[in-house]
Image 1 (tube, rainbow, N blue to C red):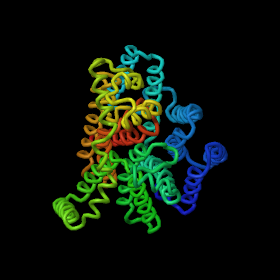
Image 2 (cartoon, rainbow, N blue to C red):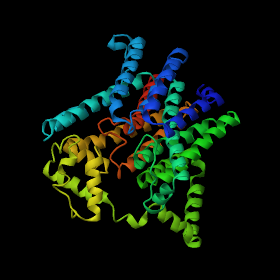
Image 3 (cartoon, rainbow, N blue to C red):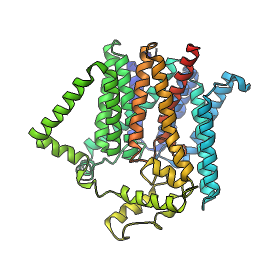
Image 4 (cartoon, one colour):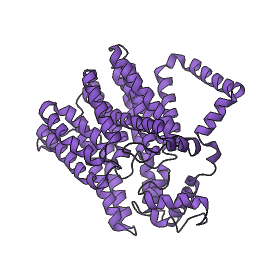
Length: 466
């Protein structure tokens, strides 16, 4: 069982990795992985190595050092391909099958990207993103092919949660030890250090996935040892605290939507009571305790809701769509149009945000997933942005319906993944990355790992029904 890996020895190992990630520079991090890699290959089973590769892709393929991304990517894919051919050989008929709708969608998305590249004003940049997208889908299929049982699924879940734990420790440490971080949180509403992800909103996006998954692990481990059970609770609370400190309003929305769906689904008998208690408490707090209301307004930066660079970026996105409705600006070419359609004065306060986004943001300028796909890939890109949630929920709710009377753990896992989906798509109203941004690994990989789990469960229970 996967819970066998939650031991004092392994938790100490994880804490060591966390401390290395928080305190060490990138050279020490990468050098420390050499002996760790030898240790894994000699002593650990294949499925754990594959999960460790997933974990490393979510940490090393990061914002720490862009020059080492290619090497780590190449090494990871090489190892996964080696395991794949060792497992399945060279006969295509033996390879794990995907539903035809998924295959057609991936081909349509790649074809859409190719068309957008061909009509882009910067074909070279577009080709880079096209190659990344193709490699990303290869990576997703390799991870999907190694899902054989419930143990593999839970290993993937832990591989998603550990990076969130690393980020949580980093955020907490930075907040408690840095006076500037406390000042930033009180004034601008975010912390500075989010470990290997130099973006608080992106860290919040990861929490939108990992907090519901940790809650799922708590539910299914209620009868485990006290150590395992309370370790999971501690990890759960630490992530919630870190989410609050990131102060990403999009992540708050996503996490709230995910939590609402999961809690109301887990406790169907008590839905009315839960909703009654929630709304009654909300009214009492608003009426009787204005201090809490003020704290909440500070937390969501209510004074800046109507003074947000997103509105300017949305206006730029709509103008790009008007000019390029069929094929868009081209993959990664949004920035070329920013100053052409800049709606603010160049010397104004809002222009500072636009300038920062122009200079430092490479993907996801629109800050809305649907506008991002539409503005960069045209109407076909927008169609893709609709197909993704459609397919995700189609297969997810089909699995939920099939297994409602079969397997307790798989049923709650499916509910948790559906909740993550609702949370991520709600978050995507205000963030571009986290679903499909040409295969940005630290942003998009968690969603597609969950989608892969759903496809595995769909194939598994469809076969059982037959």
